[in-house]
Image 1 (cartoon, rainbow, N blue to C red):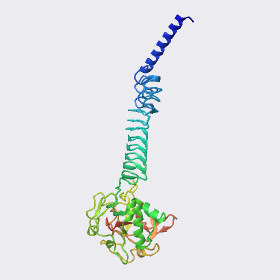
Image 2 (tube, helix red, strand yellow; image 1 turned 180 degrees about the vertical axis):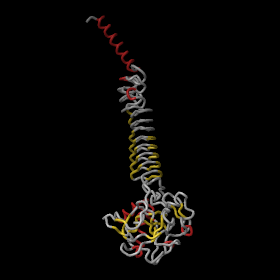
Image 3 (cartoon, rainbow, N blue to C red; image 1 turned 90 degrees about the vertical axis):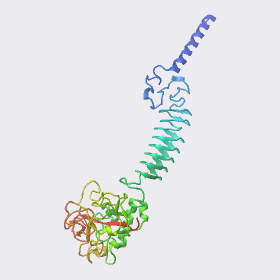
Image 4 (cartoon, rainbow, N blue to C red; image 1 turned 30 degrees about the vertical axis):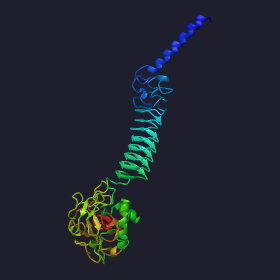
Length: 392
């Protein structure tokens, strides 16, 4: 090749290379690279950030191998130290959304970064919707060892609203929780018997401890209080065992102010939502404990309308027997039948273990073995009883 031809070739090659760089820098379509839309194949905030599959600037644009916002560019999918506003991923950079490594505002993933919403961080701080290991989560996030303020789930952390320790919207404070009706679920769990305790609660002290265990299962700190069963015996009247009030349910609703309030057909000064349907340890009205209305209101008391011993044969031998003759006195946790009284409504058929929550339960019933018994719950209940904390 002669000198003139060689010179012409070099000029042409240099021009072509320069044009190639300009085309790569400007892109072939809209800002966003090879896919014509802003954001490219995955859009603004997509898998590889603002700049699409190869980024604004093409194959060799500003910031690295594939351009600003591209697969490996400044602020791109794997960029180093870049600042990315939408959808990008960076190590060490400040990332506004979807980034890896920087300060991430929405949907991002960061190592050591601060995540404001929807992000995932190791050691970072997550404000909303994020996943953090060791971080602080303000709303909707998942944290291991973190602190969850609203709607979050924490392992080893604390939760103030809607978190893992709350139930049915219940308060997470023990400040006032001081009353409940033992639920069927709790009676079966604590007795380890599908037919419940019957009339044998382990005596009055056994009944008190059942109250404490159920309270603790509902809210751990509540187990530190002194709980007494509202049950009369041959040596003590129920009304004298529960302190002086006031008392509140699991959700902080007032049940009564004083023992005088309790000595009425329904407790006086109770919150209107619970007066006629006293709630269980979760604050759920007991007539419809799981969304289904049942006949379960017979509640052991052994008491008359003043909260005093009803009769010598009304306590299943002071709550120690399932075989003694005579039925325990019960109240109605919700009004029904001839009597509406919450502590003195009728006498149950007997002291045996027996549960009947079908509508209009009456008389004897079959236990889980199919044997007909005169059970504490056979007329519409399960042998539940009331529990009071002596100090709210």
